[in-house]
Length: 511
Ligand SMILES: [Zn+2]
Image (cartoon, rainbow, N blue to C red; front, side):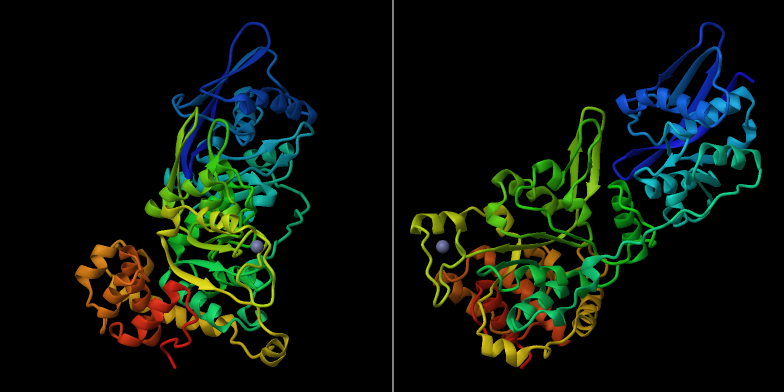
């Protein structure tokens, strides 16, 4: 046999395409060529695979070897083709049966010592392979859990090239089970009960969760803005199967192990304010990898000290906020990733954090206080339905309220009930929550709240912008949903207006 074929997968975004890896043995001087739009990491595969094969005690062809990856029009990047390349070469040499590769997809990088190393994107790659009718997967042992999430594939985990050969020959594989570390998800263990006081901010958080409203919190350092943001994912409903697959595929691409199974909880991403555009929206030299906006897909994106983010990075959020996706053009491929996140921003009142705080002295020049507030870009703030101002609490008050708050589970139950009302009301539309309904649709399709005239008054006095009217209407619907009301009542409208303006509105509509 001088020709053999194995299967692997190229990833374009979160979409996998089957790649045929062919090995031809020709006459002539011993040399190895890899063709088929391969990038630099693949050129290195030539040396890596040869070293691994020899190290494992197998043969490398003593003549000219051509490895072709097709379709040639698809860019191929990454080191996960190693296993398929070696399998094709070994089959061409007759060292493993050719027909053992027919319905088998191989993913894995080889070390020079013939060990099989984990690779990114196992889940999306195998979803594509199963779709195309392949029935068996050989993957790095550490990623068996992730691979097993895909139905219809029998999965073999391998630790060495020797084990790959054994699987292909149908021999028993004897190896110690790999050690699998299951990472805890910190956001999940965070409970709302741990946040002392801040009852109004907690209520705003509940409303944000129930209606999927973007939220902006301001307040001096240490009042609990970050603690609250971290607890938002715990209030959101569990992802359904389709969402869980989307989210898990993205996290698999970023190299995060999925040993604990599909990601069922909404994710949480909190990039630092020094984040670059590439780390925020995605980037990479040849083919773009997902950024924070995609890691937060179906979950929460938290920007602490939001005015400190570069204006260009904030501007880059506009498109995903509008469309729920981000398209990245790179030299080899244009990639689109889902990026439907719930935005939570936090800011200090001024650069020093003490402006407007009772009993504290702010030394910032008035000009810099104003500039600080203005640094947040209009298009992003336009998307924020809820603004909440947090104030420091007195120590005596803190002592009185320690341990008195509700836990996340109780709040999540109300959020879920409110989401179910919205799902029922919005069935047949592309929006699923109040936070997603476009303003004109909201006004046209659904009844206006009682006492809506107060909004006209608020606009007339400059307390509310024309754009703010839609935000208040959206939030009043969420308050009604939390109350189990058929439509927003005057009290909901009042509370929504207070939440919008960041007032100290004590009437939360439920009292
Ligand atoms: Zn200051």
